[in-house]
Image 1 (cartoon, helix red, strand yellow):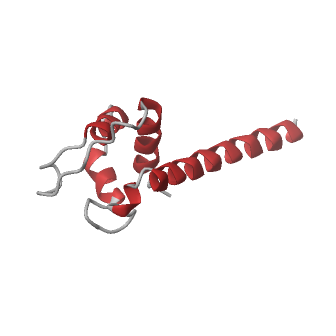
Image 2 (cartoon, rainbow, N blue to C red; image 1 turned 135 degrees about the vertical axis):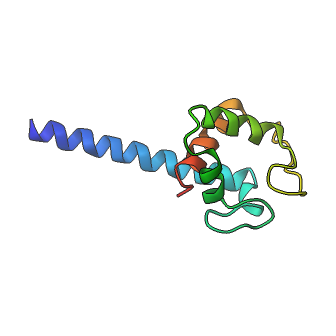
Image 3 (spheres, rainbow, N blue to C red; image 1 turned 90 degrees about the horizontal axis):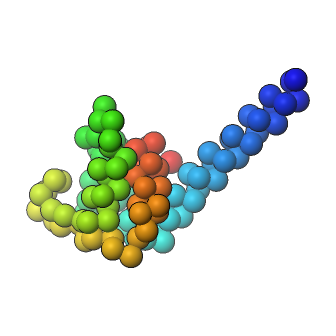
Length: 104
C-alpha cells in the first residue's frame, strides 16, 4: 500500500512539474515573456498582478484564455496586447492556468 502511495505521489509530482515546464516553455515560445514577468511589470502587467485581478472569479481561466487569444487594451493601461490568434484554445488555456498558478 505504501508503495502505491509513493508511486502515485511521484506520478502526480512529475505531471505537475511537466505541465508547469511546458507552460513556461509555451510562454517563451509565444513571446509572452518579452512583455510579462512573474513578479514585475514590464510592458504588460506582472503575472502576480494578473493573479490578484482574477482572484475569486470562478471562470478566471476561461476569461484569461480568451483575453490571451483576443488581445486588447485598456485593462492594464494604454499599451495594447496583441492578439495571439495562432495560439490554439488548448495552449491559451494552458497559459492561463500557468499564469493563475503563479507562473512558476
